[in-house]
Amino acid sequence: MQQVKNSNFSVLDNHGVVALIRLGLTFFLLVGLLSCGNLGYLGINAIGANITQIQDLKPQQNDRTTVYVQGKVEKRVPLLSKYAYQINDSTGKIWVVTNQTGLREGAQVVIKGKVHYPSIPLGGKEYGEVYLEEE
Image 1 (cartoon, rainbow, N blue to C red):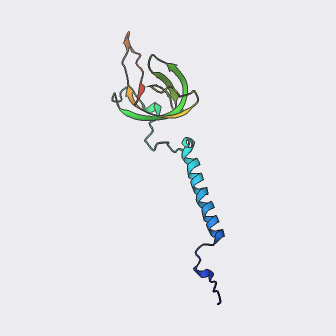
Image 2 (image 1 turned 180 degrees about the vertical axis):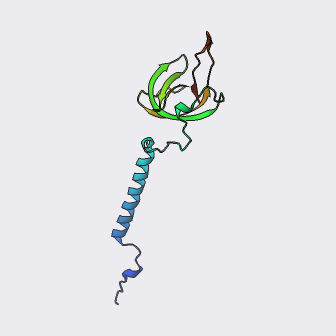
Image 3 (image 1 turned 45 degrees about the vertical axis):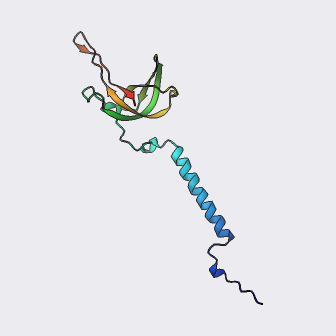
């Protein structure tokens, strides 16, 4: 009996399977690395939300408006049951009150919070300051 070998019916040989596996692993490795990285320097927001520049947060803005800010943690102050962090996004600085304790100075963060503006009038001058309370 004569054996007939026809390679036209073989979709992938061993080398093709290995190449396909390598291509798939490379793809998933690249996607995994990019999804874990900070892409803020490319103008890509980590959460895909509309980031508000800190300079655009004004005392006239509706109190309790929810916004996202992105920036670098510059200062951290422990409060009684919370923390306050000063965030700088190169357009300005704002304090954020939060329950988070793990943010370190120098960390890049995206914060979702409600805008607050407590009015503090003294001697005809306004000393209130806009801040965020993280949600």
